[in-house]
Image 1 (tube, rainbow, N blue to C red):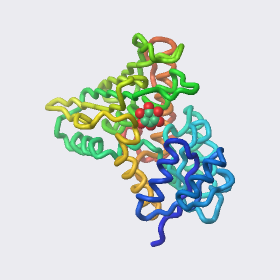
Image 2 (cartoon, protein in one colour; image 1 turned 180 degrees about the vertical axis):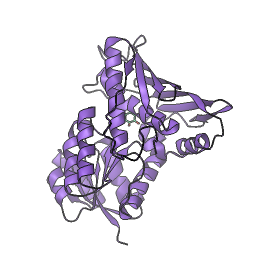
Image 3 (cartoon, rainbow, N blue to C red; image 1 turned 135 degrees about the vertical axis):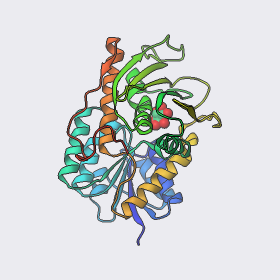
Image 4 (spheres, rainbow, N blue to C red; image 1 turned 90 degrees about the vertical axis):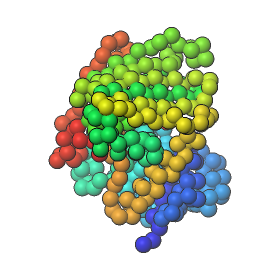
Length: 331
Ligand code: ISE
C-alpha cells in the first residue's frame, strides 16, 4: 500500500516537531506539503524536509497530492481548517484543543456526521503514552478495583511569554487532565471547581498561576489537579489513580525535563504512527470529535468556575457523534 501523503498546517513549536516526525520517524507516511502564515518559516522547513511549501492552508487541504492533514495552528484557527478537511473528505489529526468553545466543536461533530465519516482525531497524545495506556489497561482490567480518586500534577518550566492569560492555563494545559480523566475513568466529567492559590511572583500581572481544579466524575469519583505553568523548575507530569484495592502511579520515573516535547516524545511518535496506520485502513483511532467537544465543554465550565468562585456543572449536548455510544463509554 502506498505511503500516506501528509500535509502539516501550522509550523510553530508543535507543528514543526510534527512535520519532522512525519518526514523522518513515521513509517507509512510521507510529508508532502507544509503551510504556515509565516512564508519564510514555511520555505525554510520545506527546504529542510524536502516538502512542498503550500501557499496557504486551504490550498494544502484541497491539494490532490495530500491524503491526510495534521493541524497544529492556534486553537482559534481549528474550526475553519477542520471543517475544510471534512469538506474535502480528508482525515485530520487536530492538535488540542479541538476548538476554543463547545459550540464550534459541536459544529464539527455535526459536519463530520453529515459527511458520513469518522475523520477527526484530536491530539490528546497522553492516551498513547506507554504509562497512561498501561494504566488504562490495568484499571479497565480491575487490578485496583473501582477507582475512587485520580491525582494529577502538571507543571511547565515557564509560561509562554506573549499574551498569556489565566484561561489559557485551563484551555491549553488543564485540558490534558480533562481528557486523561475521561480516558482513565471511561466516564464524563459532570462538575468542575477551579481554585486560585496565591500566585507565583513569576506570573505576569493578573495571571493566576498555579491553579487547582477538582473534577467530579459521572460515577462519583473525584479528580484533583495541580496545573502550574510557571514552576521555574521544569516540565513534570505525574498521576496516581487510587482504587478500592490499590493504586496505579504514572510518571514517577520520568526525568524532569525542560520541554513537554521531550517528556512525551514517544507518545507523540506513537500517536502520529497510530493515526497514519488508521488513515491507511480508512479508520480512526484514539480521541475523536466528541472527546474534543467534551474537553471544550469542561474547559468552558472550568473558566466560569474560576470566574464565579464556585463549582460549575458540565452540561453536554445529547448530540453524540456515535449515537450508539452512551456518553459514559469513553473509548
Ligand atoms: C502545550 O500546548 C502542551 O500540550 C503541553 O503538553 C502542556 O504541558 C503545555 O502546558 C501546553 O502549553
